[in-house]
Length: 70
Image (cartoon, rainbow, N blue to C red; front, side, top):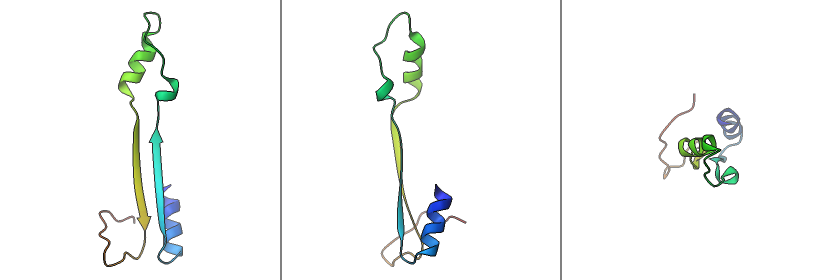
């Protein structure tokens, strides 16, 4: 995803790409039971999470970049 976003922004002047990744285990959540302890352990170690990244080239004067893709 990062490589594709990098290529898109480098080839389109002033473009910005928003990348959103999420992991949701709530869809497979079930009540704890004595016969299925494995599902409870799996849900304990893998919670919900998300990350968002904005990728762009030629930053504007008001933009401060934290990382550089090479």
